[in-house]
Every structure is written in C-alpha cells, then in structure tokens.
Image 1 (cartoon, helix red, strand yellow):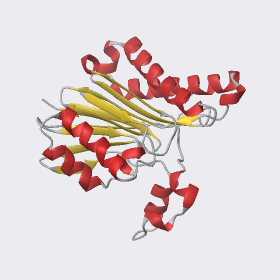
Image 2: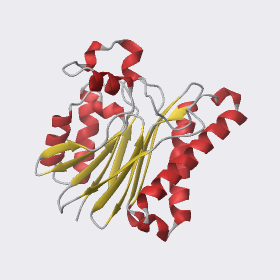
Image 3: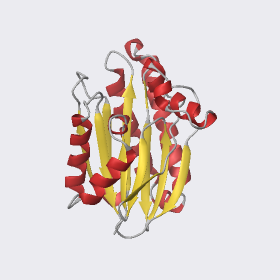
Length: 237
C-alpha cells in the first residue's frame, strides 16, 4: 500500500486526509469541506475515527467487514457533527470518505460523497463507486447528457457527506480481486482533471505502486491542479 497527497496549484491548504494500515488491510481517503479550516478538521476526524473504530472492533471487522465499515463511518459522522456543535467556527463542516478493508483478496469498499475507488486489472480500469453528487444524479436521470451541462458550483455539490446530517447512509460493496489487481482510492482532485482511462493507463504502465501514485498526482497537477489531490493504492498479491 502507498499513498500520496498534494495541495494542488489553487488551494492554500490541503483539506484531504488519508491513512493506510497494511496490517489491517485498511485504506481511508477523506476530502473535507467547510470554511475556517473546517475541511481540514473534518477530514482528519474521519480518518481518526474510522481507524479507531476498526481497531476497537478487532476480529469482528474481518468477520463482518461491511458492518464494521458502516459503524466506523457513522462514528466519524457523529464526531464531525459533535465537533461542529462545540466549535461554532466549524459548524457545517463535512467530508467525503472512501475506504476499504482488503481481506483474503476481497475488497470491501465503503463510501459517502464523491471520493472514488477503482480497480485496474490487465491494463483496464473499472470504477467501483458511484458518486453521491448532483452531477451523478443528473447523468443518471439524463442518459446521453454530459457533466459539462452543469455549471459552476453545481458541479461540485455532493448529496451525501460525513457530518452533513444526524444519520448517514453508507454504501458498502465487496469485490473479488485477482493477483496483480491494483485498487485506487482518490479524492476528486484526481478525477476532476484526469479521465478514468488515463488513470488506468498510468497505473498499468508504472513499475511499482509508488511510481503509480506519483504519476497520478503529477497528472492532476499537469491538468491544472485545481483542487487538493490524494491517491492511495493497494496491489493484490
């Protein structure tokens, strides 16, 4: 497992956070939002609470990974809202999350928001998550439409996020993997400027995971670096 993050060329601070814990098979990427450093705080709280909950759950996480991931993300949701209530300057902050427990060549992927997971196999890329965003809803309801039909702020609005509401619906799906598969988890700082097929090509051509992560971040920067960019990768043995 490897991960890389960069503030990008436009933002003054990095509101993305990530954690990789190989011994647990755990990967977490979070993209925070909110003024007065709220985004940084929210994404950090997501990482902290997901890790804490998975560690506290212990062996149960391997026995029931979907329940464990859901419980961990909902604990993060409670923590973000509690902190916002206690610190008025942070009220309304939130974060996306995409995370996975990789157990015996099965990836259990959970997410809320528009941070994504992909699988690259034999040079081909497959998106494993569906964005919780206005863009995704628009495209689903209007076949043949393009996301460029939406302008300005609407292109960046998420319909589900950690901290946005007292309760949070978490999507969890499991994927059977094969040796050599590479799983990619990322914030929209990558998927905004870099097309899916390009992500797949960069991963497939890289000599190792670290080179792949660096290439993905550089591609986002070459595409203007309009947002913080974070990537985390795992290769199935």
